[in-house]
Length: 283
View (tube, rainbow, N blue to C red):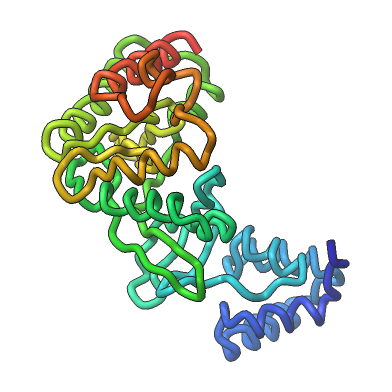
């Protein structure tokens, strides 16, 4: 890992990144200096700039590592890292011109070189874009820039049910029923209208937003039976590449899905939702 930059080098990295307009950065540093001595280490300056809303925590961390590139992708400015999983990293991002916050999922470089995995990534986009329901997260765009494949999704400001139970313990029966009922309505729509089987229903993929609405996340393993979406050959190739027939999360998949993910139908999602319900009630 490279040594952290000096204070002057830190400011230079911020300038080179283009995250903050040069005139605004100069004015901020001038006002900061007028109020007293500038922070004497880059880490202290970074903390101060985060506190003053000039940088996000993620951005400050990258500058402290000597990095100044990669803060934008397409029309989106990267603000924070939300999550990291096998099929990519999800960032909180803001549209450069419209100031609209979205979630941007970036496919790792090594996976992007694998045609079956890349095909599944784009299938996720088609699946999410096809779903228009208050309990499902919708995709708004997918693109590739500089060899980086990314998917733009609605940003859900809230907490997933896995973290909610981990922090606060099991939920009351009424609350758990309310949340599972919402997820079930979203899944029913996906099953009946879009012909989609999610195949990875679990507490971490059910997000509770600030209005009390449950949103079903992560269609990365979705299987589309509707015309134009389902590609059994791609599913088979992806499975063989992964040297497995099982897709999903072990604690929640149905027995038939554990035997062969390609044979899973809508009942497998219902089974996984039942396992999620049990977790909400018992922890």
